[in-house]
Image (tube, rainbow, N blue to C red):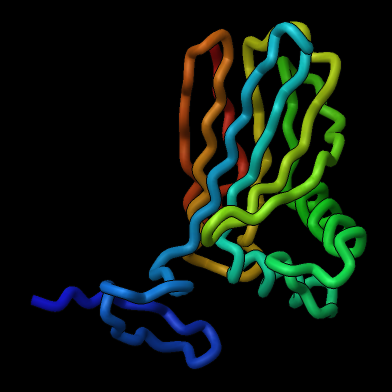
Length: 171
């Protein structure tokens, strides 16, 4: 028995069938996962953004009109700069009504995804987190952005289906 998936080709504006077994690099959906962890000891929010590598490279190339290679970047500094610029212009967080100032820590590729890391300093406690997440929505109208927030070991999650961009999580 062969399993078949559907893949939406945005360039051709059509769905294509493909076998699910043995296919690498193709995925029939567009999703990002943001995890926000409050580190009470360091008084920081540790934030990771997980995005499929191929999609992320496409959106960065489209937005900044440059060749993007996050797997084997010829110039790591240039790719860090582009990733930082994109994350900072498409993601923000407020804690207890105060805007968080993001510090970019870097990115790494793992399997089929890129993890980008940012941090917000001087966050002694958290009662409410407000997130604006427009990651990948400038390219994919079927984008789903999942958000996990962890405070004092308690994890709360939500998802934003395009075109929604804002979420509020209270503890």
